[in-house]
Image 1 (cartoon, rainbow, N blue to C red):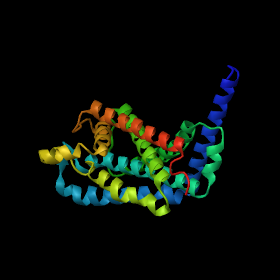
Image 2: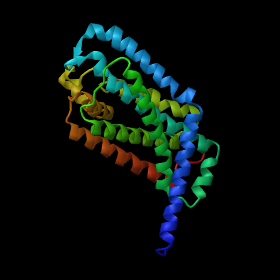
Image 3: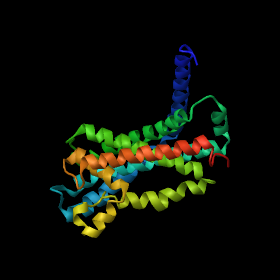
Image 4: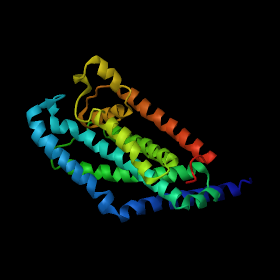
Length: 264
């Protein structure tokens, strides 16, 4: 390939990436009542029930009010759910409707296709996270201890679960398969990820079991970014998230490059 062709190809790849991510963003913003409003309502209920009613009986957690303690975890929970579900449903729909075949035969590298779909999931996760954070401010006075860590964590988490949603969609054979992982894997991991409690309250054995849950590290760093304290080493938690992102990307690239599960 000549030096003149290379910039042209990169320009074409950039157009392809922009087209995919624009389609993905238009997809969830067009039905915003279904994609953006429910997380805000759900988080409002969490704050009312767990924050006001239950939290007033619990008192302080880690030196702060219980509502302030659970706020970062609830924000992260909404980011996880929406990043995952956006890519899982969108990619499977493209596969089910045979739209994906057109993209597969186009001169678009697999990494560009993955980046486009994951970018759409990250966009929805970040937007929902912003909405939920705005809702949280009506219930608790949120302050940033380390803004850089907050931004880094939410990006890594969105990428990680968007990749997970992509892998789920690759293996899914029907729309029912899309709900299996969120129901039996994602929900238990998030609820047992330290959203509503501190790991220091658990016995040593269950603290060791919790260390196997990747969501623990995400919520741990995210909470540190807001409140300034963590149950697990922050650098180690970031290393775990980066490792999962790299590993899941490798799996997604392998599956798509081999065409595994891309035919319904």
